[in-house]
Image (tube, rainbow, N blue to C red; front, top):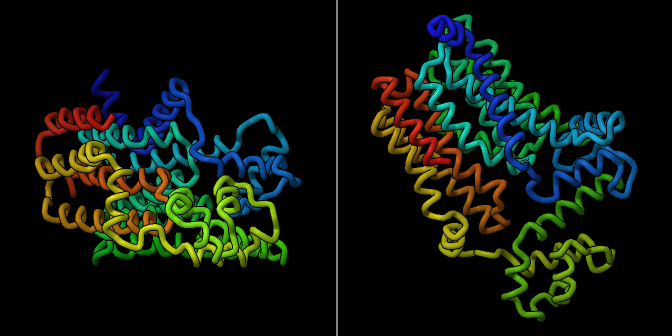
Length: 410
């Protein structure tokens, strides 16, 4: 009986991936207390419901108008349901299922299941603290790995993974384009492993098709803001965000009042702006905000200062477990260790460059810092899961070590 069940499981990797992802979601949502990270998600939900000082609208600024129009229609039918959170959970569940499918390969093994458990553990905080940016990053990771694994499939196979991967990449771009770019960039050293001769056409075509569809979607989204007042509002929002995303609290503590006066603000004006109170059209006009931004400049023009601040945001113990443990596993039990180390070094350099850029010019919030540090362990466990890339040793030994890794990550 057990042998027959295991045989049927091994013959349906897509179903196993969906079941695993659904189980993770059900356990998290039934035992923990999820919440939004920040105010952007609740605000977008209120916009589509018509409870943000205006009639219901599909213009969500960060997300595509297709997402806004869908949520607006759903809230019109049943306003008591939190459709915004449900759609994000649906995308996160599909993203996790896509990663599981990429890891399980054509026939699931104990090794692959153990690696899936490790990735599910890494994904737990994203279920508990919901944020549309991190959901888009996970969808981009999943879509990229599915397209990459489709390149490993024999001729005539892998079409389902290819279609699912392209679809997830496009969905990620609809949620937030910038997050999709970040997600693909963090995984680029691993995903580019499949673009050489035999597999190049399928992998490259997947990313090309996703890029074209995302570009068309961006054009459609911009056309939704064709009215002059909407375009003016978008410009003002970009100018405001450029200053608001800077750590004004730190600047207010270090800058002298006369320095702020050069931009036309008092310290009280800056404090009100930092708290989100900026209703005076003269003091908080786009031109005045641009002038203040120019006067204040960067928070950390020195890279060393930005690096020290970044170290405070990322506790060494967490980094040691999150990054060090997968590296040790891959070096002790993995195949192609040299190739793995090269990709890990490239991915680490890309992650550090992105984190330093955000720390110097913006606020490095958890919505970006967590995926930046989690990209390497996710990629490492996907690498370990597949025989052509990963482990050569006995599956049982690897499963035991991977279960220990899951416990350490938890």
